[in-house]
Each structure stands twice: as C-alpha cells, then as structure tokens.
Image (cartoon, rainbow, N blue to C red; front, side):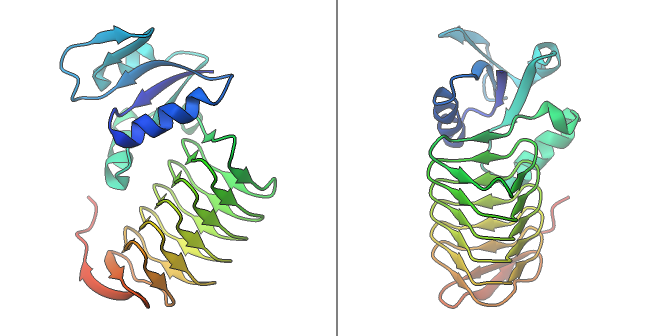
Amino acid sequence: MKLIIVGNGGHSQVVQDLILELNDHTIIAVLDDQILEGYKLNNILYESTLKLPVLYQDEVQVVIAVGDNSTRKKLAEKFNLPPEAYATLVHPSAFVSKQAVLGHGTVVMANAVINAGSLAGNHVIINSGAIVEHECKLEHYVHLSPNATLTGNVSLKEGVHIGAGATLIPKVTVGEWSVAGAGAVVTKSIPSFQTAVGCPARLTRKIERIS
C-alpha cells in the first residue's frame, strides 16, 4: 500500500519508523505546511498539504501523523476525504485482539496492547507501550500516551488526551476533549473540557471548547 503522511514533526517520525517495519507499505509523500519549497529525498516527496488532492489516487491511503488531537481533527475536516481513505497502522510488536475494532486512520505503536471487546474510533493514537484492557471505548481523535493504562470498561470521549503513565480504574469515563495528566491515577469520571492531574486525579482547570 502506498501512503501519504500528513505532518513532519516528532510524532510523524515515529509513524514513519513504524511504516518501515511493515513490508507491504511504502511512503510516497510527506506533506506539511511548514515545507515552503517542495523537494524529493529517498524517493519521498516533501510538499505542503496543498498537494494532497493531486497525490491522493486509487491504491493510495493517507495517515494524519500529528500528535495534537484538535489539529488532527481540523486536518481531517479540511481534507474531507472518505473514512476509508485513511490507513490503519499497527506496529508488528503490538497486540490487538481479534475481538477489538480499530477505526480508520488509527495508529497503534510498538508494544501497545488492545484487548478483547475494545473499540478505537477514527484517527486515534495508541502510543508506545499503552494498554487498553477489555471492553474499553475510545472515540475519534483520542490520544493515549506512552505507557498509559486503561483498565476494563473505560470510556474516552472524543478528543481526550491521556498523559504518559496515567492509569484509569475500571468503568470511569473521561468527557470529550478532557486531559488526564502524566502519571495521573483516575479513580472517578472526568467531565468534558477539564484537566485532571495527580494521584488520585483532581480537576485543576477548564479547557476551551474546540470550535
């Protein structure tokens, strides 16, 4: 499969490394609006996202390799491509249960685990070493940071960010676009548009609503 990568920052570099581990995928272009003048390196075209309509063809898929959840959503809405235009990528060292479901454009990094009955929506990031236990639900544009753990039946609404090493106990819900900070232990549900930190996690501030 030929792939177009959107984004050329640090998260994109990790996604590109993941793709190198997949023998049946080839990067044909990296698109980022910080690239002011196009160039080609190692048979990969580097251009702005304005080139996407020209490059996107049959047998080509797209990955939005941007770590920020709101930016990922804005780009997906801007491109207005059908869901099946986006590739779902899983690192060979990750474990994804056959009873789990991954949405379009979702990326599962090295050593991550997604167990039975769990569902990840579109454009979700399951980062390195993260654990999604049984029957969890992650809506679109969620980012689960490295070594974060969702125990059973956790629900993450759209745009949630879970910081590195955070742990969520069974059956908690994190409302849309909220953040659980790095190392947090979430023992109670978090409302939408809130930041929670600490052990146990406590609300610290509100987050502006995503337009």
